[in-house]
Length: 161
Image 1 (cartoon, rainbow, N blue to C red):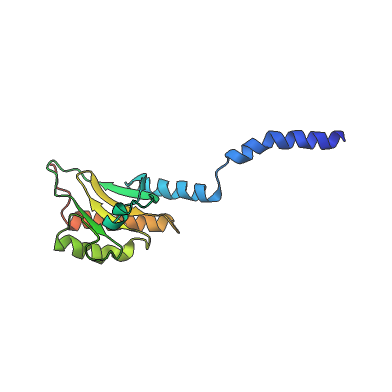
Image 2: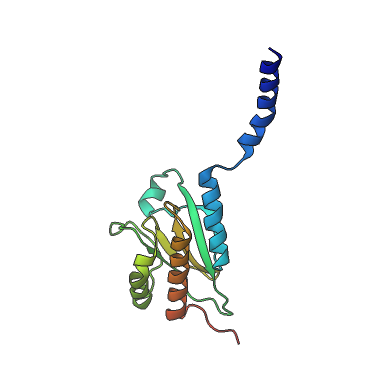
């Protein structure tokens, strides 16, 4: 009986420690986000962008991640957004991007994950919104390559020297 009580006491002492340990999914997310930071991307958990219809219907927020490649411009360039999903005509009310940028996005589209929903350019940088499904370091490297390619070829970062 004393052994049983001893095991129960030890079990109650170890239970909180096991509860605090991160799950496999959380450890994987931490590794992927650390890889993104190593590639010069900032990572932020955000509510995913909504189409006009979703905003009008006041649909619930779906959370995902925004990876941002910062740009350093003295003069801000015009902001734009580009859906990576098929949005019906008239469902978006976004600032359109130039045809040159749209061509670059289409060229780099295969580097982005399937669950990426939007590319957005602001004075802060170039952002990609996605859900991090089936994420690994290779996907993050491809995202960084895509964002860098769009910024360099699209001349979205003006040299400050």
